[in-house]
Length: 386
Image 1 (tube, rainbow, N blue to C red):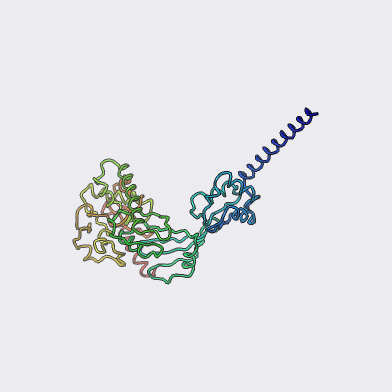
Image 2: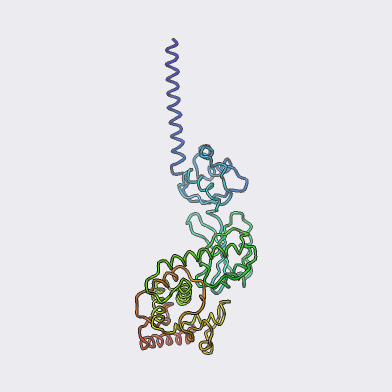
């Protein structure tokens, strides 16, 4: 009898272990396999929330099939204490494993609202955007110039939301003075700026920030990134260029940046200036003259006068030989690379062609014909009011 009882107990134990193992495998599959969510959504995790509350919220919204498995998995992987507050994108069909990773990884919101401050050459624009989970595109809620327009209610409201993300974007070709003045206008930042960084020392790019970030610290991040770009570009330079230092490269890159906004033209524009330097020709580029007038403190807002083209300043390349003494703006990475890897051409002239780009020429006669075409285009635009 005892043998029979022991045999039965053993059988029950084996069956129990088998069932437990199967239950674990079933739970693991539910945890790792695609979830039931049919359309991406934003998950709002409030401050002070716990995994129990979040799991119920996800189950109610149809993002997971079992709040219990979700909680057990978060506890088992020791991720429950790592829950972050914020607004998180839960993609269509996301598994429980992916959702837990999303809400515990960094705390950076991946959904909800974003405020972007864009410091451009002519304006400082603030954009308020909100991610549409269905399209994964940002819908613009408000856009305004902080120096000229009234602050819309949408901006004030989103600034109060705890999950709003912030970004500062610096356009290619802005001056250091413009960047500093732009940062001063951003009310989400704090701190003073002791001095304006050297021209060309800031990397045009987009920078994630937090509300209350220090202005000087953001400037330092821009300088650190630009120095890395300068080092990399100089390391990869072509041989036998007429620029002999990273500083000269930076100066040339800033001129290229101000002369064209057409990406595929940068190499050609660079070749014009390299060819002129090699032949001992003056660079004769208007943006350097403008910098001599404004010192980088805002846009000129009008055409150059003949007297300004003749006036001797350290930056007037119609008067001086070679490069000006400093950069005239903060160039982007592409212009830095063009300065040290210009296209192989014989171009020494270029002029606007009416399409937003330029017509390049090897000879003065060809250039004069291109100039005549451009003047015809200008005259036609003035007559039609375009």
